Amino acid sequence: MLNWILSQFKRQRTEDLERAREMVRAAKSGRQHIDPVKARELARALGIEVDAHQSIDQVIDKIRRYLTRIGER
Image (cartoon, rainbow, N blue to C red; front, side, top):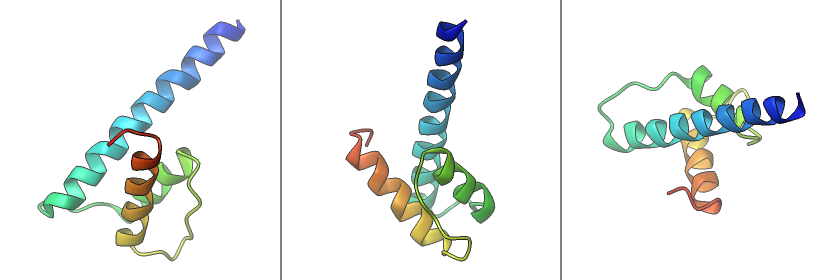
């Protein structure tokens, strides 16, 4: 049972990292609108502290730095 629970966390983390990479790519290209609420939710899911009033650019920058720090970029 514990292994199943741990596998669910690992799968969710993998999905969150992929979403983060896609969001950073979309922000870099500038062609796609990024929902600030979803960006903040994703950042929080990754364990990044974000304020409810931070701009989307600040949130994306924090996600980008997080990905760089863990070697995902």
